[in-house]
Amino acid sequence: MSTSSHLLVMMRSGCVAVLVIGLSTPTWAFFAPHHSSQLGFGGKKARIDATAGPSPFEPEVRAWDEQKEKSQEMLFEDFQKMLETERGSMSSTQAKLIKKLAEVCNPVLTPQPQRRGFWKPYRNDEKQISDFFLEWLKYAPEPERPGFYDERWDYLANTKAGRKLTNEDEDFKKWFVRFLALRGEWINTKESAQVVPKWKNYTGSSEHPFNIQEFVAPDGGFQSFNQFFLRNFAKKNETAV
Image (cartoon, rainbow, N blue to C red):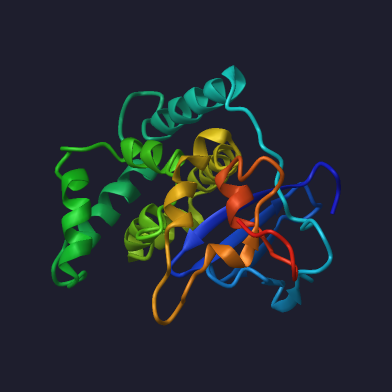
């Protein structure tokens, strides 16, 4: 891994996806949120040795500075531009978005009421989909709903029209990569650590128990959500969190 590589963590439906950015080919790793000692790269599993000291995946805390704010501003300006043509008419990207919203809100195509209920305000123009992405951008995953926005995006992305948007629309694909990269920057900030106390009090479920005492915090404590999530197991006789 190059020294310029960094991690983008995405929580998805009971597991975590980690994107290592900075390699010649971006690499994803997936692991269960309550069993973070085992990672999988390219279909192969690799175990982090809990006795080997600091994890090679421990992310650096980064500031959400004026440059990041400018990147956020440009990101959402480009999102709006993507939805219109130079003549002000609807773009093909916006047409796909409207169609996927219609699909996910159709009770025949989407029988799950919670999925329809979440997206109806967006279909009815009561909310803007850019607001959804803005909320997601700075969401600190909470214990009871860690993949809240990921899962709701999946509702939309897994419609027939949604797959066309995410798999075939080159403008949206490029924009979404930028969005995920910027979100990856945010979950490495101190602001993202605001949710860590909730995780410290979390005990998990009978199926996936969680005990914060099994892990050790970096010097100074967890300074970002990513530092918490990519935590190390405590060694024997070592002071845990």
